[in-house]
Length: 255
Image (tube, rainbow, N blue to C red; front, side, top):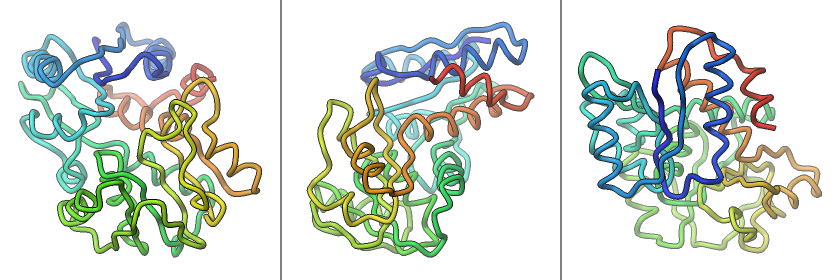
């Protein structure tokens, strides 16, 4: 089995370690490698999946929306999100799915976040779309540096939400940071974490992001990007293979 991660950047990603550990624990001969690609490289890799040169792929920033346009068919969840993070070779086609949605819901459940809490989504790309779909049954607010893009994303995902000016904090909301802020040590705008009821922070690196550090210091329920990655990685593995994801082996590889 031959699997890849497609994105830019990908050097920081723990996905290869997680998925190679999963393949080994499941007794499946194969490999999972990271490829840094532009949009042309993304299209080429999806062609490889379509014609059987690859068995599947994960897609990360900034290509999730482009992957949606390039695959042959998509799941209902991916259709609603307008973004694809998992591609599978199936019936001579490249099929797209979105395991970010199920990953976010699993993390939210693990944190014990209330189902009635308001959710403030930061960002306007594919990860933000997944967050909107995941939490569509709650009060949804979205904030991005481009308010127009935030509004467009609400319309595209058919989520009944409210656009909030970038930098505005919402008292008592669960914050989902679906921007790259934090990957290079940048904080979120003042007050965002301090007024939150919980934090799901998608960026991750070798060190905890400033937002995660602040959230823990405040005693908030916090999930960092690694926990979200583990949850969506397990769901992707189960789309590519006929076996249950070996979660503990994957978790050990993440540390």
